[in-house]
Length: 256
Image (tube, rainbow, N blue to C red; front, top):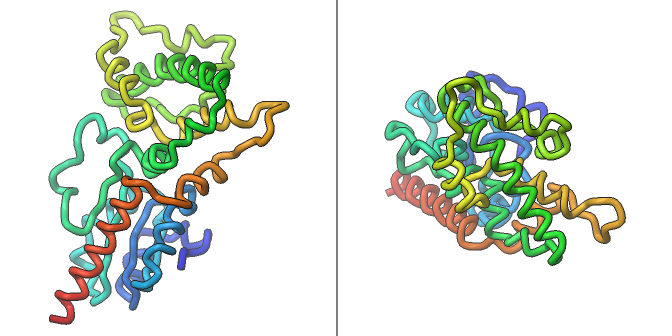
């Protein structure tokens, strides 16, 4: 079963110790924000008695993956990680392996949004407004991503409301002296935003257009993810199949 919130705060050493002592096939994931999606995966693999272990973040998960050789257990271990901005640059070769699964999109939220076709919940007028706001948000996002790739301290995780409703929104997309706007990057991101844009930002933008005053029914981010996971599409189903394959392969290796 999924771990408690307290376990999300475990250190890397404590998580490794937990994995050494597990007797169940374990899927190691990032954080509690994604557990609505991962609980659905867990339920569909109940016949394998799978346990989900949230680590509290991507960097911690990757640290554990790099140290997997220290984890001596007969139980299968599978890692699921978000590509994040490696969707732009590619996943490093040392982090590609048979027991680590990468999301197809920026994050597991992106895969859920696409599988659930959540933008179809928008009515005609809402869809037009959503698309206009998405393009406006992407004007800032492409610049933020370009800067972040040069300097990782530059944030890309600002709430869409902070961009769209800011009285200084034009300043937010103003290039610094000597800086050129990344037009090619904007074109690339805007060509497939549901896959490439940070999933949590995309989900919040959807909520903005599905929960305004007077709308019935209103939707929140957790409810939208639950809708998307009720009947997994090809992306989430693909992850489930990869997890099942990893666990089955490990079981055969341990019990030839």
